[in-house]
Image 1: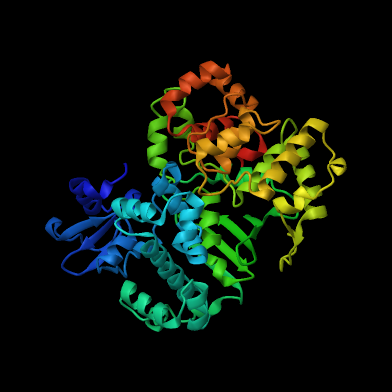
Image 2: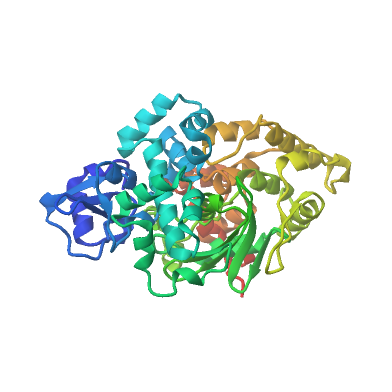
Length: 494
């Protein structure tokens, strides 16, 4: 699967005729006779091939005048895996649009973040996705509106502004145009009592993913490294506080066989699309596990690990700057010691939040708050203190920016230039914060031990040479290699 799959008509037709859910989000099928667009796995009888046309995005379908199918709900399919496996301009722009930047800062804000002119960005997005940034953001607003209409008892006026619409009229027109139903008709289609059952301020939704998904190392890693006060594992759910553009939130994420159950408490509903986008990113839900696992299985020594527990994801983060700080706190110490260091910082410098369920107390401290910390108060060796203070100062003053739009190679070079940043720290940040699917940790002790056990080369240079065959998925190979160990990061907490 690759860029521009929607142009391979024969392959798209085959995927639609076999109702192959693996392709959901890769392309959309628009039916010329009904003027409806669907996901490839739509359960209805497939249309005749001559009546199908294919688009790379829901926004392009909407722009061409097609309405979303009421059966397969194409707006709720997992996102295209391309945006998380590429670092070019279009992929970085799509990650930023997913993070709500167009709604908050407009297209000029998107362009500024990426360092290109608005014209260049519009041209590239149109060429690849058939829709510009405004149309893509509008499609996302429509999806958020539908979610709020169907999962909350909120009045329509509140939903309109929470979803990012500038007026109720635009909200009504967009919903009617995209779903061929008015907002109140969308809500009326729900089973009785569904929409009114929610607690005020609490949203319960399902986050879809491409199967298979192995939750063990994903949730095991997040739970085992959880910073007290900011994160916890409770009643089968990973819970954490979220720093968001308009306020803060608390999320509880529970793995289910065919989706991730997500319960969000937000101080400002306008943060809903951003919160969903960040949670999906943290759990790597838009990955294409079949493509990843097929590639890794070509190595006879990795194949048994993949076959034993397919669908491993890379546990990521909801806040790139926070993860970079935690990576420095974790240098050359145990997981438990890193948690203790982080917990002290949280208690002393984090912003307090109110958790209705009790366990969570703070947001992780911002780089600005950490830059004001007296270095002498940090219980760590002097060299690591210098590493920490340099990092938080550069994050706070904007010299270093880590975000969804980061150019991976440029960010690596900047991090490597900081004191105390070696290849391991830089690559763990690239893998878990920036989302580079090919980041690799050949010097990691756990990786070298696993390599030795499996009969792979265990010196960093020889292992890197062998791992060339795993590209562009070496970050996933890291998860499979780590999983050979009995460390708590590899197991769902009981």
